[in-house]
Length: 202
Image (tube, rainbow, N blue to C red; front, side, top):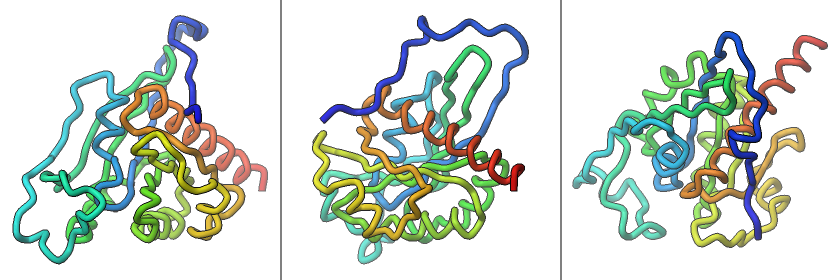
């Protein structure tokens, strides 16, 4: 299957004037690919707070689907990407482990929208992120991370399993690929704009 494509910057219209910026949060379960996605799209060296996993994770963090994972995010990931000549996104990745969730409220302040990154091998891990953004009425999109470039479940089946409203965009992505990750962020911006427009009209 093909993943989202994004027109090259060379084909984008050259806009002059002040640059706008926006903040996006990337959340998801432990090992779902948040640090990978931020690193893939960032045009600067991403800031990461990766630390070696210790005995504190034993019995708490399920590494059965990611047996080679030896580090974890303990505060946040941070990257920056210019989607156009006048739009810069600042991307913050949340820690996935429950004991670091106290960071989430601070990371979400000022965000226009969010990504919930989903690993279909562990769908239940996505529920805390979905609940967090829905409770705060922050628009979000669901991105199914296809680790082996295969979508193992139909998108609408994932929507049903996660009880996601029809208005919430769901898409497949490969968090390792820059163009695929870009398309996810574009979807967040578009969804946030539509959400804001609907609020103003309502």
